Length: 611
Image (cartoon, rainbow, N blue to C red; front, side, top):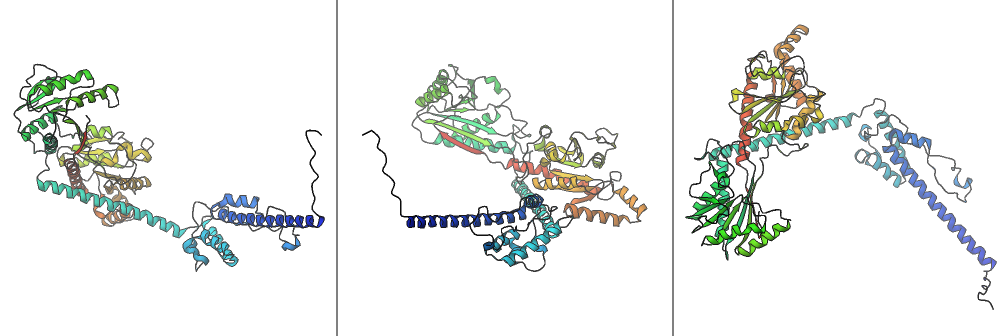
């Protein structure tokens, strides 16, 4: 016989059994086809409903071009058995091509009740529940109601209730922002009162070296922290490295490079009761002009320095970024013949990840058996603006150069041609041709922010003339950032006629950033003269009407609405405006001083490390 043998013949079942098996297969195929058809039909209906609710005109067109099919598979039942519905198509649900899909359909526009709580749940949710429950009468009612609302919305129709709710929400948001700004101002005023009551609120309170109260507090905290570290129990000499990262203020004009370190060393010597403290530097001449009372100054690494009997050695700004430089600190510690403690202020130890710097720290650990301790003193910049929202952006350099932190700053802004420059001159008692006056003209004359001293409020007070908003050069989208407008203590939005959309948008931006502002109507004298000639209205009636219109659009109270004329500085609200600006300038400076004096010094301590 060969290697391969033929297979035995298959045993076929009897013909009766085969027919029975074939019948079961046909029935299973029919059942599968029926279930698949039902599933796809249901999916088509749900898809049509979703498209009808959200698809708008595009959905209408697509549904009309490709209507739904009740099933996608052939079934063995004859057409007559299905009631002759094979050729029927469901009606198109989206018929209005002018419906705006961006506007939700509001069921409350339909009078009376709707099934399935549609006025609360919405058309879509109500229809889904009705279809799920096979409640066809409710489906027809909801479809008719939805089509009615769609017709009202289309072809210039009105979603009155929706527009009203949206407008109410906008007004509510504006009022919430205004209330938040008022609360913030109250908290700032409370802080100023508290500091003034303690007597800690004057730049005139300086010590013999001209240091203000805030610097004196920093020096005291640094010295007390070092005192605590030195008084801790140690098994041998200690190396304490110290670094100060403090944002300076404009009134620290008497501060030199090493003033903070020198004063801290002198105060520490007094706290510890030391007799001899030695200060070592790479170049001792850098201390020229500094007060060195009670301290001995010498060059870092000088073997002939007077180490004998020193209670403490301080090193200012030394560089020890190589192992070869470590003996200078170690020999200084050993030569004191005391506990050998060393404090390094503002030293350079190399990059922490540098291989050589790691050996430096290891070498120092071997000698200073009392341990290494790194102390950082950090004082962040004054928080100049509230964190209430809006896009963050930095303080413009031209405001920094103008001494922003120590001055009061009020800005006049608005659309081009509203008379801002003329108003600026009138507030300062100047005429257009006087020295120091802002340029005026029929064209846009203010092309860059310009600060002018406002002498009625005193020194360090400035009234800023800003370019007009909404021009091609200064579009509103970037105006807030370009002008740094949220950093001003007060903003005056001026307009020579009714406030435009640009003015109102600017007000909303100021609310968003928590910036206080007032609404100012300029050239009121011309408005009064024109009204008298046109309608015969009296001055009081016209002013009352203008004030109500501004109040309605700006949502500002009466005391923040002003009407003036630069040609008549003694009439209308001009005297009140001048006094308001003076008060705002003083308040702005006081708030910045209070925030600066109230800053906290953060202290970070790390052991077995240097800084």
